[in-house]
View 1 (cartoon, rainbow, N blue to C red):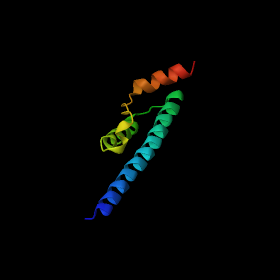
View 2: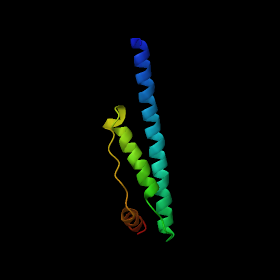
View 3: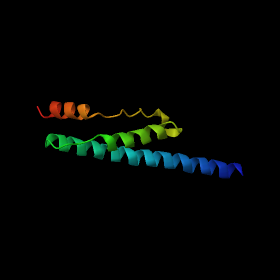
Length: 89
């Protein structure tokens, strides 16, 4: 494999990781907003989707270029309730 080809492959892989991380971050925020809205309406909600995305983001974060980004915390139902309580006052 030529050096040029190796560098190109590495660059493409890094680009994919950053792109995927960004997509997951947007998805995570949407899931958080969904949970917040359900909580505000008194509807049952789960943080499972949020935390599945969070786990994938943190795994990507271990793969190089996005390691400088902060690790995302797992979200609990209590955290969502506290946020809603705090912002509803």
